[in-house]
Amino acid sequence: MAQVRFWVPTALNILLSVGLAVLYAFHTQTHQVAVYGILVTLIGFFLLVPWYPARAWRWMKYLVALLPPWLLLSAMLMILQEPAFQRADYFFLAQFSVFFFLQNFFLYFRLDRWSWQVLMVGFASILPLILTFIWAGLRPEDPYTWPLSEYAFLHFTMVLVVILLNILSVTNFIAFLWSRVETSQKSLRQEIANLREIEEGYYLYENFFKINQILSEPALDIEEAMRRVMKVLTDMEKYGLLQKGAFFLTEPGGQSLRMLVQYNADNLLATCQQVQAGRCLCGRVLVSGQPLHKSCVDHEHETHPPGIKPHGHYVLPIQWEGERLGVFTLYVADGTPYSQRTMGFLQMVSSAIAKRLVVHRQKEQLHKLIHEQLGVIQAGHRAGAWLMQAILPSEKLLRARWGERSALWFQPAGELGGDFYFFYERGEQVYFGVGDAEGHGAMGAILASALMSALQLLLPYDGDHRPADILRNLHETLLQMYGDAEALLRSGADLLLCQYDREKGRLRYAGARLPLLYSANGKIEILEPIPAAIGSERMVGSSFFDMELPLRPGMRLYLMSDGLASQLAGDPGQAQTKFGRRRLYELLAETTHLSPPDQLSRVQAAIREWQGVAPQTDDITLWILDVAEG
Image 1 (tube, rainbow, N blue to C red):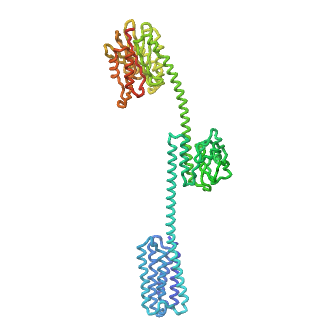
Image 2: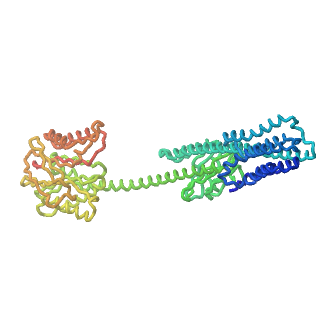
Image 3: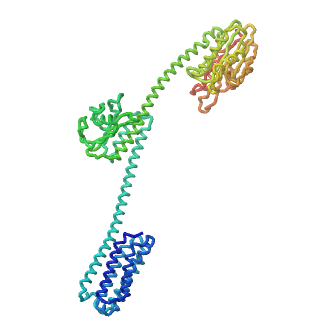
């Protein structure tokens, strides 16, 4: 590949070589073949230099600087052998060699890249020049005497051309050094600009992070959050923002703005509490949905609050998915030019505010919906609680039947619960019991109501309804009610059923996971139930059976759900500790000598002391009954 950039020095070298040949011919008027051969070789060398391939030029540059001085020295020595040339100014040749060396040296070598090569080539090139000067100094003739021939003008012309060409070479080198300086300065300026860019980016990120932190605090209401955001924005003096601004929210219907927050702009209170769509800068932005910059107060600034001074504005819409939620405006110094960086930052802030407003609105709507639903649920709970009270046997009815021989503690964990009790009397047969439907609240209450309704439909029919048969019937009722529903959606119930025959003094019991306790001679005895709830997959029809218990005076029955034993302790030292069946059975044994109401009071006091400040864990049902004395 041709090295086109070397055409200029090559052309200069060719001119100098041709001039030297012409000068020699005029001076000597002889034809020494060796001298001409050297000069023609030198000229041919420089003619071919630009056409060396790039890989070869790497080495050829050394020859370009080294060959001219040595070849010229050889030519000079040959010339001095000619008698006809003895009167010539041979010091001119030394001059010529110096200029030749300087020209090539400055054109082809860079001091900042090839330090050791420069030293070596420079020394090798200067050596023949030194020899030339030594030779000239040893001659008796005055080396500075110009030839007294008619060729003095040609001498003068050649020296002038060489001087001008070397001035060009040195100027080229100086230009190269200057370009290096400019490149360094440009690089330095770019680095400074990059550092400023990084600093400004960090400054913006820092402030945007502060704004995001404010908008992310759930405890702040929207007005206080906007006030703090405005404080952060107006403190950013680097961007020409004045410590003044305001936030507006869109009124329902989208035809006006209502001022939410103003900062250091009390004069706006008189004129900008409400801004109509399309009026003044904020109203125009509400309509267009496009951000606006004004460097001064012009004709579009239609509203003039009291004490208005020259200023400019950045006005941005707050919008989410095309919906205009509001507008905010910041004051800038009068004449402040538009800044793309500032506008981009403020648009980021606008998007963050829009997200907060949307979340705030959704939260308000959700709270409203929850409040409405809670009202419906609470009304349903109150209706359900009233219904449960209507279905359950009244305490007045129980007192009329057993008087002081019966004591009942029925306390759901909430307005509604899954616990229930029942009592039905037909002739000499008395049916009573306790149930605990799975689940709490409304779900438990619904299942309990269904079971009680089924009992009220079943017991009035004539016949001997044994407790086991009643359990089986209730189990099948639940299975029919669930149908093909998945097991996950099914709920069972624990049940304790008793049938007391007053004539025979005999008690039949059947239970599903709820035992029947009775006391005799100060001890607590237990009739164990089936270990499966009715309505569950573990229960099968053949599992139900009756247990008979002859009742004697002094025997006491205890019908209860698992709420008493499940109560957690309120003492932090006994956290997650249940009252437990053993502690409950020991308490009943210790108090069995008391009357049912007194014994119930002792149990209630013990449970409440254990509970402390802890919430009630489960529905509580405890029925103490002396049946045999009836």
